Structures are given as C-alpha cells and as structure tokens.
Length: 243
Image (cartoon, rainbow, N blue to C red; front, top):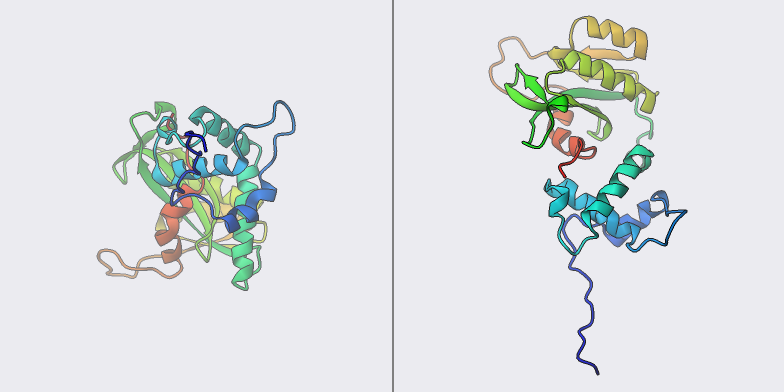
C-alpha cells in the first residue's frame, strides 16, 4: 500500500441535510444545463448555504471544506432570483400541513413585524431607524399560517412603518396563498389598513388587542404562534448576506 492518505469525507455539521432530507428536496434543486460539468455536488452547495443561514457568518468565513464562498453565493443568488428557494419552501410547508391533517392551502394566518439591528456592513439604502423599537437596522414583516409555518417574509429598512410593510406583505401573502381569508394582527395594524386589506386583498384583518389593564408581557390568542416562531421564520428568507 502507498503512503498517500485516503481522502476522508468531511465530518457533517449540525446544519447539514440528512440523506432523507436531501432525497426529499433533490428533485427541486436544478441541475446546471449548460457549460462545463459542475465540480461540486448540489447537495454540498445546499449544505453550505444552510451553514451560513444557521450560523449567521459572512460568506467569506465559510469553512474550507465547503466549496469556495464565491461559488456558493452565486448559486444562492441564482436560486433565489429564479424562485427555486420559494418553491422548495412552499412544497415543504404543504407537506408539513398535509401530514398534520391540514389542507396545504391555509385559510387563516398571522402577521407581525420584527426590528433587527443592522450589521456594520449593511448599506444605508436598506437600513433605517425604527423610533418605536429604538433600533437602527431592518424590519422583517412576516405572515405565517396558524401552525407558525412561514407564508411570506418581506425585509425592509427599519424606518418603514409597520402598516406600510403590513400592506405589502399581506398583498404578497394573498398572491402566494389565495385561500387565506382571515389574518390576526396586533394593535399596530389597526386603523385604515383594516379596510384597505379587506378591499384589495379580500382578507379580514382581525385585530387582537391586549386585555384592558394588562401590564407586561402576556400570551394573546392566536398571536403566540407567530411570536414564538418569528425568528425561525425570518431566517428562512434571509436579507442580503454579508460578503
């Protein structure tokens, strides 16, 4: 036997797909149809994207056992722009709902917004001051179903008003999920937005208000689902990553 060491398979990261998970989404991950044969497997590219998504590191800090960060980022950008990411996400959400005995097309959901502090590398064109939360960064406007599964996420500058972001994200949610007819929201979405959403989106926006005399945090009907899952849901569609 020669002295050359056999090349070992990299030890998997916690964010890597299992064989069963990859088998599920592999048919939805396109194979390059032109140019030279790809050097790296589609699965390894997906694992690299999931590593960035899970850890929050910059692309340049990808571990060396992954493909080069420029290659991974190129696939990430192309798949997002071509709708591959959305199609995979929608298919997985429908599968989870079906396994739970639910119709894949939800009729009800929740809307909420999160203010997230922007990194130093975030440009001023996509970053803004949220006076209510006193955060300089971005906002993630979220619509989920009643299980807390993401339907739509819209990322804006932090200076965008909740009602304006709510109008845009609910209009998009109606396009993605035409079956949605009622959405629960907190008091920040009350006012003229309720009538606008009813007229233009055919969605009844039901405002869940705090009980009179309540002090501090308390779980509200319907609202707890999106409040507890909002961080996970927002991460499924990350804003423009740091290079």
